[in-house]
Image 1: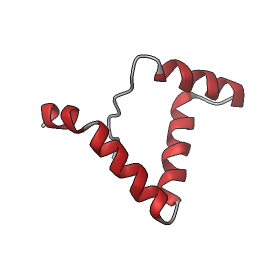
Image 2: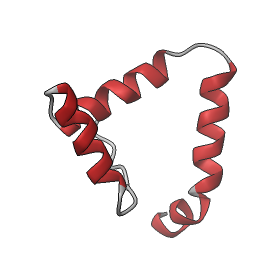
Image 3: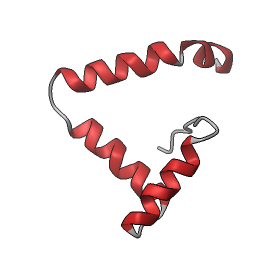
Image 4: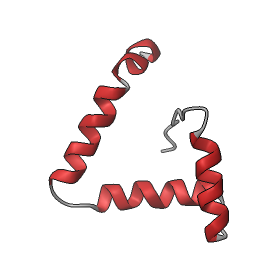
Length: 64
């Protein structure tokens, strides 16, 4: 499964900068960040997921 992710205007640039500093592609960094978030146990994951869903609720409604 390859979910599409909408980034703000400045986020791709920040992602590329951070990936370049680590000598990897931006896609690899994004995949690693998601894997770390999913692997996290406890309320942090639930809290982060809730914040993302709430923040992007209008976008999700439009895309549906």
